[in-house]
Amino acid sequence: MRRSVVGLSLALAACAPSRAELFDPVRTAVRERTGIEPTWRAGATVDKRVAELLAAPLTADSAARVALLNSAALQGAYEELAIAGARYATASAPANPEVEAALRFPLEGSDPAQLELLALEDLSSLIAMPWRSGAASAELRAARRDAVARSIELIGRTRRAVYAAAAAERRVALRRTVVEAAEASAALARALHAAGNVTELDRLREVLFEEDARLALRVAEAEAVAAREELGAILGAGGGWRLADGVLDAAAPPVDAGELEREAVAANLEIAATAERLAAAGDHVAVARLESFLPHLGAGVSADRDHDGWAVGPALSLSLPLFDWGTGRREAAWAEVRRLQQHAVAAEVEVRAAARATRERLLAAEETVRGIRERLLPLREQLIDETLKQHNAMNLGAFELLLVKREQIAIEERYIDALRDAWNARTAAWELRAGARPREEH
Image 1 (tube, rainbow, N blue to C red):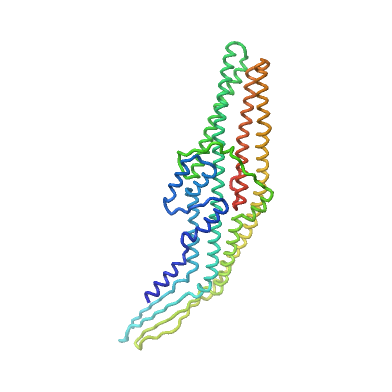
Image 2: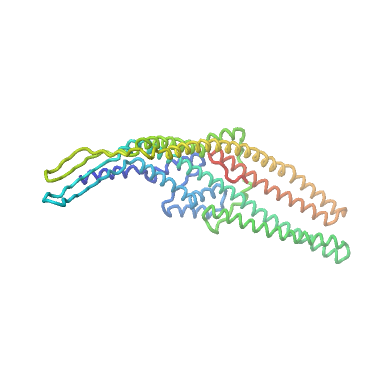
């Protein structure tokens, strides 16, 4: 008897999916969709790999690899798989049998005590087990899709943070150039004013620009620190790492946004997970219906011992739905079905809208980058050259030359923003095709 109970317990315990069984489909899906393989950490086994990646200058791709290995938020999200797996194991196992015992002593006479034993198995739970197990299985599949989506979203978020930090660092360098130019211009204005060659108005204008440039540099430095801290938080790393040079200037692969909307809807993991949860909700409706007219049905064996010996026979336990017809459970189950149906519709609408918006943003950003790089910057260089010629010919003063250089710096700052926006739009398009919905578009 003891061996059979132990064997049954081990068989039921084996129903719980292992860590590898839970995560292998997620690992495969993330690798196929992103080219990067995630890890569900069981300890400090990947610290060496993280250290190796952080020791080298970070690109958008290597930073994404660090985040997948080292993000505590993502590792916490992966634990949802263990929760869903445990629920599946629970739903796939029959309810434990109930055993009751009663011992009665006669108050009069010398008759021996009476012993009554009752063992019952919940048949209603057994009948509902296929639906419960099916619902838990669908919810586990949905949890896997959620885990894949969270991984893709983290990659997208990491890449955007890299581009933001790179743009911020580049803007600081540009602002330092502005400060140097402003200091030179202000020093020249002071000298010329002291010599009586410029007016007080000209001097004040250059001094004001110098002060404003210093304040703008301080703001840019603060924004660079904030961008770096945000990226460090995503990576799960403190200081000691640095970005690779030319992150924003890296060659961008061509992006065909023509079929982006259709591809985004077909690949979207939120829509797929909702479909799995709808299947689970349908099974929950079936369970609620069953429990409405059969709340509890138990069958087993009853044994009774008195002075005449043992008497054994079948036993039946039945709960009659006289007062609670399960209306609340049925309505709740159907409401969950309707909620998920509406969520599926809303998710598709939002994905389509995000795809259309991303397409327009991508086209506009790439056109802006090309326009600045191919037309504005060359024209501005020509303007500077021509202004310098006029200055050397003493047709223009030093202030006019410095003014043109300031305008050049303003265009370069626009170029930095345009590069960042273009990379963000490419990342959003990539996320949509990989199956996730971009959470931060800018």
